Length: 164
Image (cartoon, rainbow, N blue to C red; front, side, top):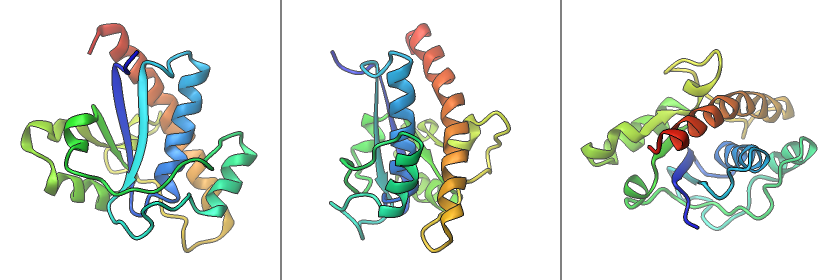
């Protein structure tokens, strides 16, 4: 069975935020019985880490909450992603700008900020990059991503129910 919907999580290097969001959403979809209906992937706006696993700190913090990032590998966003994915969800405004500059106009509506799905979300809310910060930054990323993915799960359930 092919997935009805496809979601791409996007950050800079695809080693911290976007793989975390991919794993969180994947687990939530599994728990909701939707893992076959929604495909989830992640990518970065740069290829510095292409082929590398997620940052060990991101993996460790995620594992403590029951998320497995170990099998994920970094990749860069490619032009076909705009056609392939129904939603391309950005962690911050730089990613939104990057995708917006490269996206064919007919697919621009697919690009959004991940945090717009959070209960207290807004169009300009961001998931901050924890790469150069303290361990608490990885916990903050998980808190924000979990909140946004809960709302995203509801959105995806609605779209699946409506056949869109």
